[in-house]
Image (cartoon, rainbow, N blue to C red; front, side):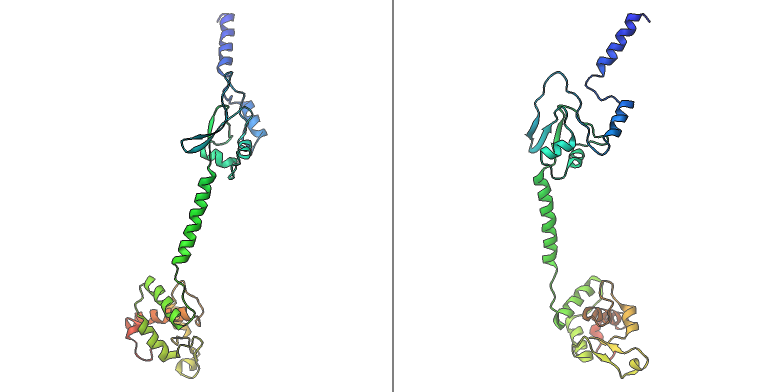
Length: 239
C-alpha cells in the first residue's frame, strides 16, 4: 500500500471515533476507576445543544450536558430514588455511560408518591374489611364460624351456642377434673370441653395452639364434630 494511502486510512479511522465511546483497555481502566458510580458524559460534538430539565409528553426529561454523571443529575434534579432509578428508567446498565445531548427520562416524584399512596390505601382497605370480633362468646362464635367457612367445616351459630352453654356455660377456662377423661389424664377443657388429644388431632391451622383459646377450642371441636357427627348442629349431648 502507498505510504500516503496508509496515512489516510489512519486519519479516517481517527475521525470515525470522535464523539463515540471507545471500548478497549482505556475504557476498561476508566470503568475500574469509577466502579459503583455513573460515568461522566464524554466531550460534546462541535454543535452546541440545549440542556436542562424539560417537560416532555407528561414526563420530566433531562438533556445531558458535558461532564454530567447519573449521580450528579440525581442530586441536582432531586430524584428521590437516586441515580439507579434514572438508570433503570432509561435502561442504562453497567458501566452506566451517558452522552452529551442524550435525553433522559427522570423518575417522577409524583409517580413514586402515587405508588406509596396506593400501597397505603390497600393496607388501610384490608384492615377496614377485616371484621373486628368482640372478646366475648358472641365474638368467639362469629370468629370461629368465619374460620370454619374458610376451611369447609359446617356448623351454625345456634348449634355452637347451644353446645357451648351445655358444656361450659360459656366459660373458656372451664375444666372437668372428675370424669373418665380426667381419670385417664386428659381432662375436658374450654368452651366445648375438648380433651387435648382431640384438640391436637382436629386443630384448625391458623388458630391458636392453646386449647384454652376460645376460637381455637370452638373450631377444633366443630371440626371433630364434623368428622364424627356430620356437624356440631347434630350434637345434642355429651360427645
